[in-house]
Structures are given as C-alpha cells and as structure tokens.
Image 1: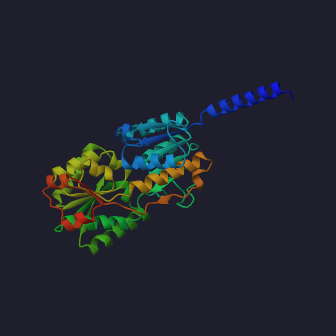
Image 2: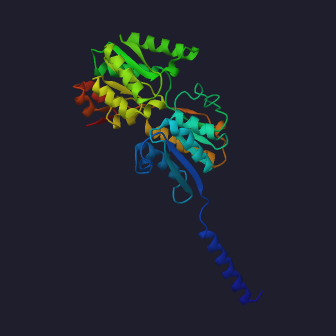
Length: 336
C-alpha cells in the first residue's frame, strides 16, 4: 500500500471512530407515578426517597439526561382519576413504570400486563399484585414496606410512650381491608393480642369509602367513643387524604401515629415508616435489572427491614402534648 493510501485510510478510520464516539448512549425511558403531590419533588435533589433512587441509578450508570429519560406523573390526590392516568402512562409505552402505593400500582396493572412495574406498598399477595414474594409473576416487582402486624405493635408502643394515659386507640382503615375474610379476622386477632400486652384497647375506625365526608363521619364517631389516639393504616388510599386526616386529628385533639413520613412532613405528629434510603435503593436496583433484560416477575419482592421514627414537635405543641425526652432520644428525625 502506498503511503498516501495508508494515510487516507488512517484518517477515515479516525473519522469513523469520532462519529461513533459522538453517538449518544441508547436512552431508556421510565415513568414515575405518585398518588398525589407535585412532580417537581421527584428529582435527585428532592426528597430523600428520590435522592436514594436517582443516586443509586446514577451509581449503576443510569443517568437522567444521558441514557435515561424520566417522565413524571401525579394522581393529584384524585383516586377516581387513577385509571385514566394509568392508561395515559401505558400509552406512552415506557420501558419501566415506578408506581407508588397499591392503588396506583393496581391502576397501572389494569392498564397494561406487559410493561414492567416496580412498585412500593403493602401486602402485595393479598392485594392481588403478586403471586408470591419470592416469585411475583406477571409484570410487577418492588418493595413491601409492611413486614407484618408486629410493626403495628411497635407503633402502638410508641404512641403509648407519647401518651402514657392512653387506654383506647382507634385504628383507621378502609372497611374492605379488615373484612370478614380469613386474613382480616387473623389480622384483627393479632392486633388485639398486641394491644392487650400494652394494656390498650383498639377500636376499629373503618371507612366505608375514601371520601372527605366519610373521613369526617369516622373522626366524629371515634371522638364520641372517647379514643385517646389514632393509629393510621398504611393503605395507599389514605395517603391521598393525608392533609384531611391530619386536620381532623388536630381538630379532635387526637394524637396520631402514621405509617409514612409524608404525613409528618404535612404536619402530622409521628410516623414509623420504612427507611427511605433502603427502599429507594432497592427500587432503583429493580429498575436497573429490568432495563438490562430481567423480567419483573422473576425478581423477588424485597421486604423492608429498617424503620425510622419521625416526630413533629410543632404538631405536638398544637395538640398540647409534651413528648417525653426518652422518646425524643429514640427518634431518628425530629421536626422542630
């Protein structure tokens, strides 16, 4: 080969290499759907939960704006609109949908049985989201943030420490969650056994539906029954109405223990939620696996193992409640 031909060949090879190097990385698209609240909070600099998700994705090489497109959706606190929102999300055909709470995940599942879903919520098997924790099946996996009824025992214990005189606590839930099924009856029995050990009687505070008027009815009824506090179920339906629940708890002067940090951040008294960092990283790991070819139904559902106690002192003051120093010392986070 003549020197001139060799030079031209080397130049062409270098040019082709440059073109290939300039090609953008293949972009994958995920949709994140939350039940309520502004989507602007879903970012790497937002809430610790989102920081954990985006930070872990970045560590794994999935970076928004580079090889990852993130679409954000909010149910805006309207459960009646979840089905329509789910159809909109499914119509965009993302590679993965991240769905927060059972109602949102069930709506997405109703709109598509092929697009992978990474969910966080409670009781996936009983709610019909998964066949089992070890092998969920179908198009869903994720993180279960309620280990078992013993967690509620811990919540009752904390509430008793905050209000030593409490002898009667109302358990706020949807009636279908504690229905006369084998599971519902077993759950109620376990809750009774735990409450008896703490010398507390638990009053079912069951909503017939998730509407503002139904919440108002339930709170008025419990106040008349002489409850000393409230334990709020982890059901996703209730999260949507968290502001109303907090306002009614304050109005009826009832100290409440909530299942999610979001309640306390919105002005609630106390929460004992799963650790956001742990949950977020696990969700990101599932998303990464699916983007790299794994089937969601083959990825075991992770059960949260770490829980944080969060206390809002401003809410305590509004209720005229003094939190004992020993309980404050146990808190992982205190909101002044």
